[in-house]
Image (cartoon, rainbow, N blue to C red; front, side):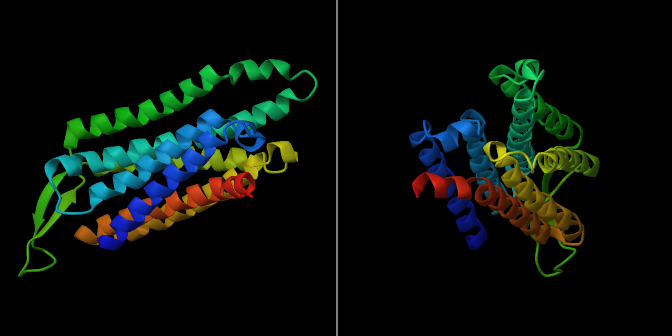
Amino acid sequence: GICLTAASLLGTVISAVVLGIFIHHRSTPVVRANNSELSFLLLVSLKLCFLCSLLFIGRPRLWTCQLRHAAFGISFVLCVSCILVKTMVVLAVFRASKPGGGDILKWFGAVQQRGTVLGLTSIQAAICFAWLLSSSPKPHKNIQYHKDKIVFECVVGSTVGFAVLLSYIGLLAILSFLLAFLARNLPDNFNEAKLITFSMLIFCAVWVAFVPAYINSPGKYADAVEVFAILASSFGLLVALFGPKCYIILL
């Protein structure tokens, strides 16, 4: 628990530092060329991803059981939605640079970008709300694994709700990866697609490995597996997307 907590806090601090660097250097070409507003929102969502893992650590209570998966699901959809919209903008800008493609940018303005991120995130919020109303996660005393001990754990309530939450994140992640993969060979001015492709490949690999590991992990170990997946994918996105940019900005 201590190691996972330390990793979560470390990720939060690093995200905050990177956000500070980007805000301080917001007028530089590197930050401005890569859609600074979505980059700021993406860093905030990554901070939330790191922080939500803390809800999985410690003795389960009703409010932590209910909040942990909702916070995780909404934070990750906010994060992946920003990446998806950034990828769509990269493709739109490149298309607009070609003859006859000028009109496409009116569909990808700042208002449309914010609206898309908000809309995609609202869908996940609705999924979480329906899950909490129908069959909410709750604390459970488990004596199955250790007959001489009572293990406190959270049961997910509705397995269908949890599956839909994960599936929606997976759908957006796969779509982001496919669009970024298609855009990977665009000219250097649009090369953020390569970073997005690599980051989403890491993200998808972590969560593909998570599903069988989570299913086969008993009780409290399932929570540890989920926290590890949250932290691994969050660090993967943070390093892959912002590491090269910070290197260019600072050096």
